[in-house]
Image (cartoon, rainbow, N blue to C red; front, side, top):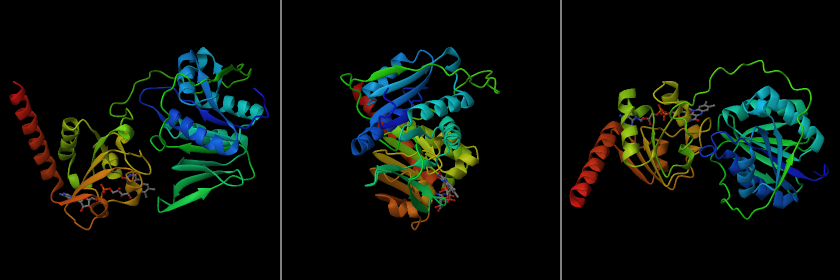
Length: 339
Ligand SMILES: Cc1cc2nc3c(=O)[nH]c(=O)nc-3n(C[C@H](O)[C@H](O)[C@H](O)COP(=O)(O)OP(=O)(O)OC[C@H]3O[C@@H](n4cnc5c(N)ncnc54)[C@H](O)[C@@H]3O)c2cc1C
């Protein structure tokens, strides 16, 4: 690769490929940004036997794949990957590095930024190029009460992490062409201080929430863990996914993969049910892309009720139960009719 080329790098996390779309979403955004600054879009892949993923990344908009392949890179290691990224970024001097704000990315990106002596904006919700050619990094700040616009004019690369679900991936197109550049493994990589004993996927953490067309979201107004469980039944009947506010996740009523909000996932369903949720900014910042909101709350003045297209002043648990009953009756009637 010509080392003077201006390039935008996307750290390509290919694990759990069919659910974890953040790399593809970043590639799409990088294409957008590249047009404004005449740069090429590179996916940076560390791993083992990654060929089929490279092809996928090209089909989704990567013009170049920089790959370091080794069996020992099969397991994601934050220490090894930091050193690799530091080395490559030092050699090739990208203008921008984008990293998905997954749990790995959130640990990896600040380490890389520190090593490169540059800044990092975490959890961006928007990225643009300024007229001066800097990356404008837009991110919630001060607990979500302010939206900050950050630039890194004096240091390169400009680095940002972005949560899954913020940008839209480009359609898969096999006609797109890209170059795969295999780079040598640097000689000195640290030995892992962490030994992976087993790998097990957590249930309820399959990242479908950001893509779901229907989301049933519950908050403290659901009353108890037992009552909250009804939302799973409702979501199943609607072929939707369950989301929750922070107190619910903290109370352990649901896995943290279901957290909707500034600290969790950004959702964009066609239909959002909001049961017993007050509508704090940290939560609603991630629901603004919902097409249609039905909110149920005892308090008609709750912010969520004001944001909703349909606001039902009622007990959340009772409405949920009634909806489940109604949907089951409809399904039963339909199947009777088909019989
Ligand atoms: C830095 C920071 C980051 C944060 N990040 C997030 C985040 O990512 N996501 C998030 O959700 N929160 C986040 N929070 C927390 C957020 O500020 C709110 O505290 C939280 O969203 C409130 O959750 P809730 O609506 O479930 O609870 P509450 O605010 O307690 O609201 C409960 C609602 O239920 C209603 N209600 C009560 N009983 C019933 C009933 N029987 N039937 C119907 N309605 C009823 C009440 O009227 C009320 O409106 C964050 C906070 C901070 C400081």
